[in-house]
Image (cartoon, rainbow, N blue to C red; front, side, top):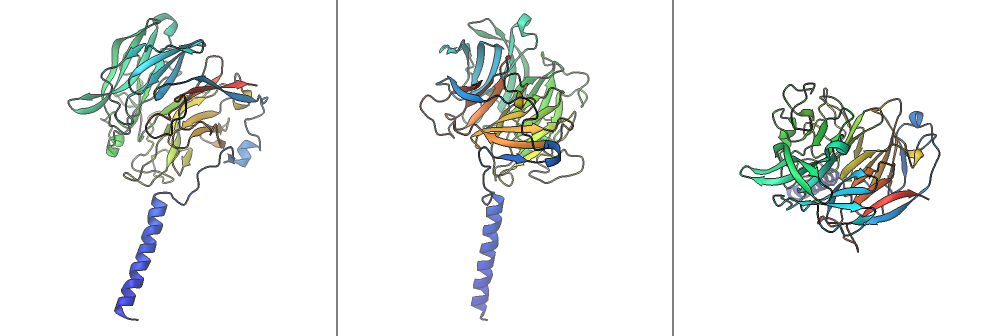
Length: 396
C-alpha cells in the first residue's frame, strides 16, 4: 500500500469517526418523542394503568385569551381573575374571560433582548388580606444583567411596587430563570439560571443556577440548609418550572446543555430535596456522581421544559397528582405519573397537547381547571393568527 493511499484511508476513517461523534454530540440520531405515546418506565409500579384507578373524565381544549406578548407566567387571584406576565415587561389581567388591554403595571427597566425579561409571578398565601403579588424581572446594572424579585400591591385596576425582595442575582440574555412559587411552608421559592456561566451553579456564594428560599420580605429563613444563605438547592442550569405534590414533594424542570456548554439534549425532571446538589455542570444527561442527585427523567433530543404544575385532580380525576410541564422546543405538554409510594420513581409519561406550538406555562385554577399559555411570539416560534394565546382544558 502506497503512503498516499494509506494517508487517504486514514483521513477517511478520521472523518467518519468525527462525523459519528458530532452526530452523537448533537443528538441527531435520536428521534423526538412521539405525540400521545405513553412511555412506561416501571411496569411493576404502574400496574398497567395510566392515571391510576380514578374515574376518567374526557376533556376538550378551549381557546381562552388571544394576542398576548410572550406570556411567561399565569397566576389566579380568584377563579375569575387571572394575572399574566408578558416578557417585554407588563402584567395584564383577564377578568371573567375578558382581557383588559391596559396593563396593570409596566416595568420600564426590564431587559428583554433575548430570553430574559419579566418572568415569574406568585400570589402571596395571605393575598386575601394583604393583596400582594410577587414578580421576577431582568434588568441592566453597572455590573451587567441582573435578576430581581419585587413585591407588588394589587389595587384592582393597577399594581404598584411596594418593596424589593431580592436583587443583584446574576443573569444573562440566556439562562435567566426565573420561576416563583410559595411552598407548603409559606416560603417564597425562586429558580435562577446559571447566567451562561456554568461554574456559578456550583458556587455556594453565588445565587445563579439555584433554587432559592426566602421569607416573603426577602429575609433568610433560619432553617435553610445553608446558614445565612437563601440557597435551597444548587447545581441547576436553567430551571423554569417547579411545584409541590400533595405530599409536599418539590419537583422542577431544568434545561440541559446546548452544544456550546455540553452535548445537546439532557433536559431534566428533578425531585428537589432539601440542600440537594443537582449536578450541573459536573454531570449532565445520564452521567452520575456520588453526592449528586440524578434526574427522574432525561429528554434527548431537547424539549426545553418550562412551567410545571402538580395537578390536584378536581376536574380530571384520572390525573390526580400527575405532573404536567410545558415544552417550548418540544411544542407540547408532558404528563408524568409518579409512583404514589415512591416520589423518586416515575411510572409513565406522555407528550400531549401538541397542536399549539411552543408552550411556556401550565397552571391549575382554584377550581381545578388546567390552563396553558403558548410562546410562539418569543422569536423562536412560528406565530399563528391571534398568538400568543391561553387555552384551558374543560370537561366534555
